[in-house]
Image (cartoon, rainbow, N blue to C red; front, side, top):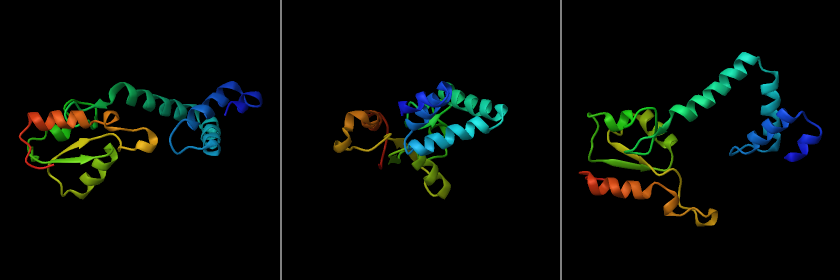
Length: 144
């Protein structure tokens, strides 16, 4: 992507390179996003930048379930109405959103933050499996 530095303003080239680092964003998409931001009103671009900074400063992982949250424990883990003895293990935080939309699961969750993939060099030590095992040893869990 560094070929953009010779024909593009340096800040724009840098933005293209940063977008290209995002998953699912190829070189053409990175260019389109960068030029879109260049054309958008400054207030909207600033709002986007502030939202990115805010998510990095305020969002963390729940110490119990490893879901993304602003508060610790997260709202799901802190909800006493949920079945504390049932844990649904999910790959990503987005999986919780999908399950919660159904309204049918009333237990707790545990987010692994990925899947084991030897081809990609991702093993159990790269996921939140040790946190799950520690949780299972310390809690009265009936079902996983």
